[in-house]
Length: 201
Picture 1 (cartoon, rainbow, N blue to C red):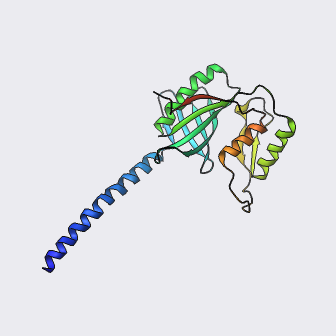
Picture 2 (picture 1 turned 135 degrees about the vertical axis):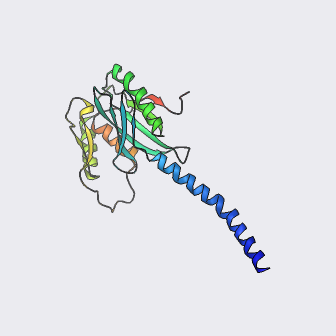
Picture 3 (picture 1 turned 90 degrees about the horizontal axis):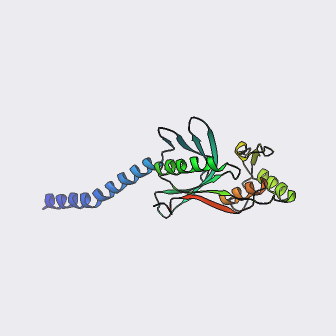
């Protein structure tokens, strides 16, 4: 009788733990697969370089040029597939946009991201007072825009200079940081959607 009870206990453990173990293995495989940061293609390569848990740069190389695009990463409707918003500089020429954006979309799909690729379309400059206030707020948060005086947006880069004080009541979101950057650069928040995984056929 004792041996029968032991056998039944083993069967129960196998029936309960077996599916849980398979689920755990599946989750680990998805996480490992989703941790890929670079994709290589015959004519170009793409990599995602994270600055923080939600701020990143998408680095694009095609043999002729190397471009870095500001991005923010968040959750999508699928828990295992993150969402990435990639900003294209508003002053990039139309020909460059037509060549690069499809490649960005292809690379992001390869890296298992849902994506939204966009750019700001600005018709007027932000007033100097607002730009200066945005630069000051970025500095308070520990960020600086290198090359802010450069004519082309592609020559500018958001860098972290120091860790901000931890006494703030809440963390600044990536969307708020990108808004500050847009104001500091003088861009109006008129957004043009260039590509999206949600509308891709």
